[in-house]
Length: 448
Image 1 (cartoon, rainbow, N blue to C red):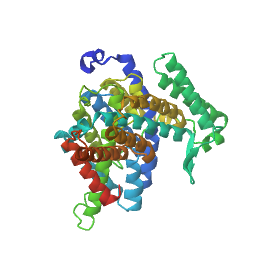
Image 2 (image 1 turned 90 degrees about the vertical axis):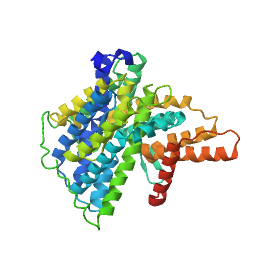
Image 3 (image 1 turned 135 degrees about the vertical axis):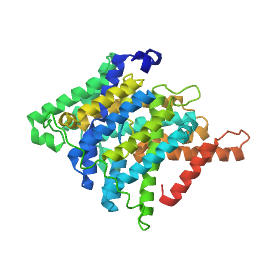
Image 4 (image 1 turned 135 degrees about the horizontal axis):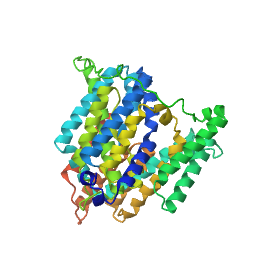
């Protein structure tokens, strides 16, 4: 393992990597329950979706570890799965088989772009201040997810969001989890995030044991069993290319495919940059190591996922939880991937881990990631304003891709204007200018 993953060279060891892999898995385990719930709205059987979700996440994450040697985990992307189910299938009336075909075609295009280094070029061209901003923005984004999952922040028709009721089981479970993580982190106990998730889960399950009806109201349930496995034969290899050959439907297909393509592209780019920056993996020129291999793995994951019946597979921001525990190599990803494969047979246990139990880890990891904000040069408005917009809009739009889009667009516009009206010229790369033009076209055509 030392020879293959270069553990000492990356300042880590087997124990750190294993703990990091388990932590990443537990912060992502909710996808085992959530993805089938969302995608089953299309008519796809939930049981088969559990297996496909675990299989796609497990094999792709292991590939990330073995091929790219990076501590990044992958699974069906949140947001993209909702777009697939509720917009493509439910709203547009597109059969789920055709929707999977759009995801499959998107994956093929991504593989081509990755092999030609287009995606890697984009990742490495983003200015350093924006890369730091992406890290901080992702930190706020996952913290916001943690607050919502715990019930600390709730929807409000008048103000969009507001403070939740703190005297509820979910909030109390999350608060206890945060306290456990902070105390153990202060004492330099290894695996503090993992222990926090474990403690929160135990408390939640004890509550469900004492008051099943009250717990059910807060979506806290005891495991329904231990072992369970469902076949994927009903959803695997069901691609339908009929829309491509139909002149009346091909443009709808292309529109859907490009939506998947665009969102997945910039969500993945943002996540790679943000998590790599947090792990101090960027080289002296601010480039993500082995970014090409990571992006190719992501593309292969999307293509493979479509074949076995799940929506777009993407790199997960929750990978930062494992990085925060010291994960620095692909061994972290291998551990996470193996746990996803095992979860296919123990899904009742992992499905029963409530969102309020993983929320403390997300909130504390957000705290870790926001620290990079002090490295951003806010004294230069052409650097600071794009960075600020990136940080602010990631949580407020609930999208890493949208925050990065506005950040890049504002960076190019402000710096080109500065070069026109100021004596101090700043070089803006051709790749950034091309990206800005693409974003403007997209905004004109779609509104955003």
